[in-house]
Image 1 (cartoon, one colour):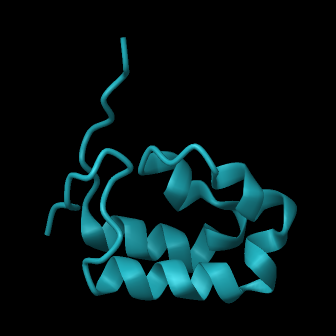
Image 2 (cartoon, one colour; image 1 turned 180 degrees about the horizontal axis):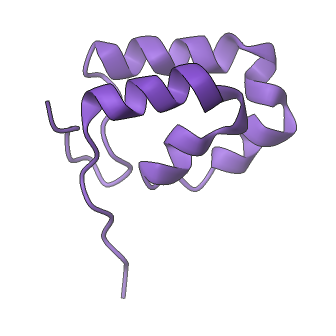
Length: 71
C-alpha cells in the first residue's frame, strides 16, 4: 500500500526551496525519494536548488505522484 502525501502549496514549496533547498527538504515534502541526493551534495552546489526553484515557480515540478502543486 502506498502512502499518499498531501498536495503542497506552490509558494510554500518555493520558499522552502529558496531557504533550505540545499538540504532537499522541498523534495522530501513533495514525496520524492531522491531528496537525500541534494543533502549529500549540498544541492549540487546550488545548481539543483536553483533548477528546482525555477521548475516550482513555472509549474513544471509536480508532486512525486504527478499531482500539480496548489496555487
